[in-house]
Figure 1: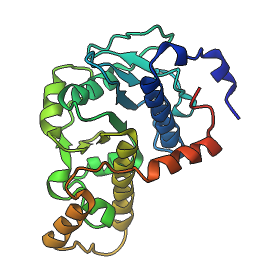
Figure 2: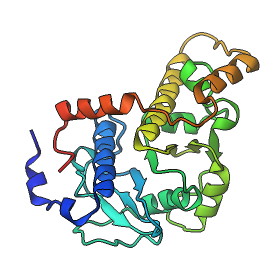
Figure 3: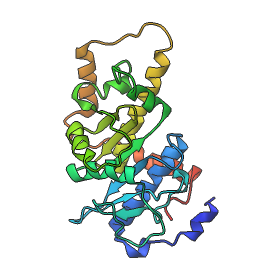
Length: 258
């Protein structure tokens, strides 16, 4: 059953290309998934998607809506200066703009950027050793597959973008120290799968740290597992899982495609 407020948001489907509309629908579905898994922080944190074309526009959540309320039509289209390029009644969170624009400006192959403030992600981000390779999920990020960025305060200063870009490099996952998690994807489905693995790894680490001494596999095993995950890097993660995620949201949180 669609939420009542959704009828108050006019559809933009006729104002955008079919390609943009499909990106809007997938991104809105990702917002609903993050809400479904309870990875939200009230109206804060952000998921963004790059739009095709030379203008470097991307979509970001409307500031003030819960993730479970986001629809394809409510997403705000902005440029790299944070200015809306399409009529909308909504504003954009400036901190979200800073972090996401940094990635989109530096990584043209990245379509989607997902940033969360989950309890597990924040807890591991505050641990000196960071993510430990103690589970299969964590070993996906072993070695040079995970970046770290030192906390500088709420991300409102645009000059932080250069340091975010430098720290992320060509990786697809980053832990923002004392802050949370960030995942990138060449598709929206890939960003979701990387974020899900990183979140699961953080949850498992915190659970394991409450028990006996941890078993950490050898460097060789950890690297081999990471190589198995990433392969030659040519195929995005999530191609099989994303259609299933869409079907699940059609059942549990319909209306995101409005």
